[in-house]
Amino acid sequence: MGILDGRTAIITGAAGGIGRACARRFAEEGASLVLADISAGGLTAIKEEIAAAGGTAVTVLCDVAQEDQIDEVVEAAIRELGGIDILANIAQGAMGDMAYLEGTSKKQALDSYITGPLQSMLFMQKCLPHMKAQGYGRIINTASHSVVRGEPGFAAYVMAKGAVMALSRTASQEWGRHGIVTNTFLPVIRTPAYDLTEQGKAAAKMIEAQNPSGRFGTAYEDCAPVVAFLASEGAGYLNGQVIGVDGGMTLIA
Image (cartoon, rainbow, N blue to C red):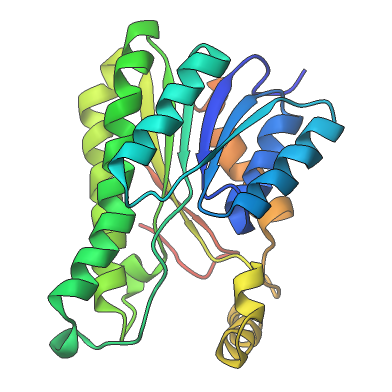
């Protein structure tokens, strides 16, 4: 038996990177899944992989910036799996074009907000009645180590990730009495996105060189097990916490 045996989970951003790794790990730990992403091809691939290993996964095409599509994901979980025990908000807006604080536009700020804390909040709100009714829930949100140390040139992104942390902490205080715990993880993890540009490849080399662990962690081996634990019954007394999954690059007091 796995640590998520018999549980149902929604995972956003499930077609690639950390989301895909979490989908694999959750399925291996026994969870039945609703996988949401904007990439139809990526969803098909991970669904087939999980099915081949004997797992259960339902896929829903979802742009998290569209509230009606968020509704479809939650409705699919209830209709197909009969409930929602776990919400893993892995999908988040990208860092976008570089812009220092004095040059950050309203559009950049709103785009980061809509695809970050706002969509995370909407997913949480729509899952709440189901979690509250059963007296059990695990919510895992994704932020960034840049919130702790700052990230010059990406003001909108950092602002949005700080809001995700604040959202999680507020939920922990309001919803904990219902058996629902909410935590945030800050990943510094090697994903395929780093290989798309020369700038990304250079950043990956820099992170590997600077990481106290002497390497750049991977999504499946290093990050997914942490998220799976946060989704498990064993994390029931871990609430409102911020956890760096980064090899020691960010020390959170």
